[in-house]
Amino acid sequence: MAQLFKQVNYQLNTLIQNIDMGVIGLPDIQRPFKWPDTKVRDLFDSMYRGYPVGFLVFWANGNQDNVRVIGTDEKQKSPSLLIVDGQQRLTSLFAVIKGHEIVRENFIKDKIVISFNPLTETFIVPDAATKKSSEYIQNITEIWDPKTNIFTLANSFISEFQKKQPLSVEQITIIQNSLSQLKNLESYPFSALELAPSINEEAAADIFVKINSQGQVLNTADFILTLMSVYWDEGRDNLENFSRESKIPTNQVSPFNYIIQPDPDQLLRCSVGYGFRRARLQNVYNILRGKNLETEEFSEELRDQQFEKLKSSQGLALDITTWHEFLKSLNMAGFLRGDIISSDNAVLFAYIFFLIGKHDYNLEFPELKKLIAKWFFFTSITGRYTGSPETVMEGDLTKLRTITTKEDFVKTLENIIESVITPDFWGTTVPNNLATSSPRSPELFAYYASLVVLGAKGLFSRSEVRDLIQAGLKSNKSPLEKHHLFPRAYLEKIGILSQTERNQISNYALVEWSDNIEISDDPPTSYVPRYKSRFNEQEISTMYYWHALPENWENMEYQEFLSKRRLLIPQVIKEAFEKL
Image (cartoon, rainbow, N blue to C red; front, side):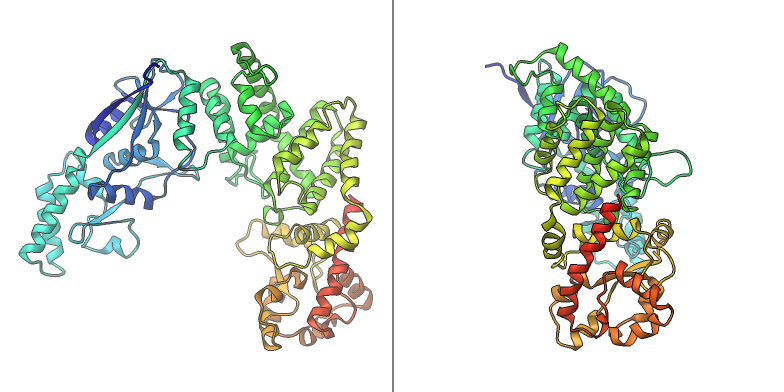
């Protein structure tokens, strides 16, 4: 059997030099995540104490295309060693020792700063207090600056330290030795496994996956992003750019919204769901490798065909106009912001159906928007894509494979809805599911969305729930808040000590925050009469209907109130659903 790798030993300064010169580069087969500074701190601490920090894996690749390098922008050489495993360690070490910026998870450029106490030999991520302390080398990057003389640095540090407190001869020796030891990390030994250049890109990606299977959990989306980096780097860049822009508020046309800020792998799910009618990304990974799922054989020609299909579907999925047309469907369903959506999968899968309806069946936008609004409301309240989302969605997509007309497309979705929303659903299923204190209840979120659909006003308010929610989207303080109708402190006073009982979702209502503050811990019998006095009988009757409040509820026993309200809330949700 051919040897696929060899072991090579390096010192840290050699690795840093090779990265700086461009001998070591980074292929785009890594997860797009960055270590927190605390993990970088722990890495330096382990090396300082002489602990092993794991193998590196390089790939001696003759093909130098599709390679992203780390380090300075201008390289003296083209990369000949590509990092398969160890990117985060080497990026962190390079960034600290050379003082270069990294890109955080929020796409903001920043420098990693690690401080070191040479007397106690401890590394920390500096905070406001330690930044003012003379006990620390504030940024260990200074240690490896070519202009730094380690002995001069040590003497200067000791001099500044003694302005605060005297040091013994023994302590001075500890400081001098620890700074020298830190400087000498340049000679820290690393062992690397170097993959043979005969290994192709797909095999290298597979090795990366298997190596990392014991660490950070990798999913099939990562595998597909790996192949995109090898065969269609522009496509992956487009996913990452869309994802980044969806998180940044702007006055320009962009993917930004208040419902979902999708990650690249989530956008990929939409592209492949639409283009291949597949929800299980494992199948898509094999398809994009050029595997025929029937014959189990691989073909470069088939691979190229499948990538062309992905390019087309991704172009449609990342269209800004289409994206915002879809989001209007969710707004129509009453879901104006992400914190009342219990599952991102419900959003992603609804978008797939929106793309299918728009591009494959040519539904006009008004009809499509109404259909997807109803579909999303349905999948949200039923938690359709929370258990085994890929399996359920795969089954839903399978039903479309023989559909040829837009009428049949609409009918197929309607039939799925009707098979679940039976007469017992509103009278039994929803009331039973409301008997919970879970703050992420699909039924509770559907109820809030229903208030928006029905044009309801906040409890004891003359402002519509929709307006109050929208007013709070761009503010740190939302004008609308959840309020315990029977305040927690009051319930404790009457002997209801269980937090689960006090926080039953049927005890919540949406009120304006100023009212919430004013109500405080007053019992309903105290605050309800003064708030009712603001409105006439018809207004109170309508308000009580919207907020599912039984007549004379303020005088009821707590458990009786919960029981009756669990029967009223589903009727409000049902009306909103039927309106859609």
